[in-house]
Length: 569
Image (tube, rainbow, N blue to C red):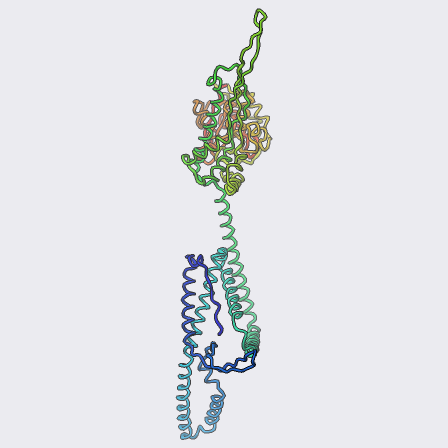
């Protein structure tokens, strides 16, 4: 018996909500098909078997396990040779005996009797073939359910197909073809001659239909060309829409996947906490001699204190995902302990001296060695992060979390440096530091900021506007302020000392720091040095202005000026 291919589903697939309904339909259709097939009456046939050892032939009756295809009864009965002959006879009688009413009446009575007999025969045969029809209908429903289940399974395994209606249609057609091929492959190999005959007949029929279709197409070729062109245009339009949609989704996915997941205020607050830890460490080192008195000598071997704020944010985002100031404290402590190692080592030397009488005496000479090692966070990442976390960390570092200015990242201004020719500066009552300004102006044209961020202690490029200002102050003999982050370090340093002037402050002086808030969110994004003012505009020297040192100017009331750090010289 020829059977439909049966689908087999794993326990995981049966528990999948997306496949639950299609699988239930397949199971139901399978049960109906099996039940309908079981009701088909089986015919007894004689089967001969030959004993290979004795050659004895045995004949026995067996039930024929062969699926009888349903047929269209009306066509099967109507197309028999007998009906064809009768139809011809009736036609001739009608043509030659139309004038004879009695003959015509008899003829009609004969036709009515034959029709009644034919209906009886058709009704009987229809009753006999009813199980076959039900089996065929059940098998068709099963085939449809199987194809649908395979299609839903394909969509679950390949979700990208669901975005394009053309892809969905093509996928379903491919599944139907594969299912039909599997069905043919599952059929028995018997009845080869009959199969060949059916194939020849089907081929002939297909050929005849193809010829008829070809003739029809040729008669209406213009219409088919127009329809084909419209179909191609629709396909191209759908494909374009799908491609644009997939591209937009991909771009949106990439952007969202490479952006810091934490809120901006939390990012800035956590950065300020880490900077506070570094400030406390610096204060501890500055007070070593008072906190550890009694030594004859203090020797210092200190690395720079500082970090790249984006390295810290990338590290915390890789470990904690979206973090808050409170949830990040544990990781802050872990990173800080790994980055900074402060070591105090006591050394006692036995030395001698000669007194006034020429006698030598020994005494202890005590030395305290103070060593600070700073391992950049970028070097710690491979040790402290798992492989998956390290991949995430590298994405955030490459994109700066799509927030390059959040920690005072510089100016996005790509225009050229301005010319100060003809500018007349108005001096205020504060003296300022003209020598510092001249030094800063000599840096104009530097691109990349390597002298400034490497001086600060970074091993690779960072957003370096604050490093540039700190470097200029250091070159002028000031060890402070020293900061790498505008909002987290620079602004608090000036404000905590009462050295702050808001936008519109009238007594700014050369060498003051000027802070900018580009997105007007209350946090400083950029810093530069004040050259001076002509009474209506303020002129500056800025590092990392479009990744270069430039001279710029702004209206004194420019809303992106957050305020001024006022230097005491």
